[in-house]
Length: 98
Image 1 (cartoon, rainbow, N blue to C red):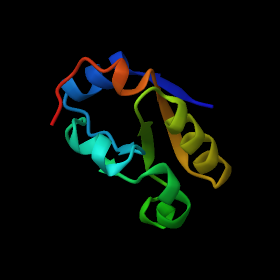
Image 2 (cartoon, rainbow, N blue to C red):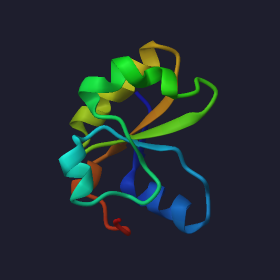
Image 3 (cartoon, one colour):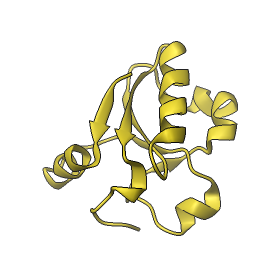
């Protein structure tokens, strides 16, 4: 499974890179604080909403600790998507929140 650290994500965002971040936490968790610009697709709905994602676009999967996003990454990779898991999740995030 491909992975990216929270530090790498923060550096890329600070450099002005456009990242496609998919937060797989539940809606209430996301409302409590999330990385600006994310798309929220709760893990339990991912199978039914993956058609909203483009197989030619790279995505970074995000959750609280990296476990659910790891499951999402493995599932989407098996379906042919270009995805990376953000290790450490929001617990390790030190950047801006919305």
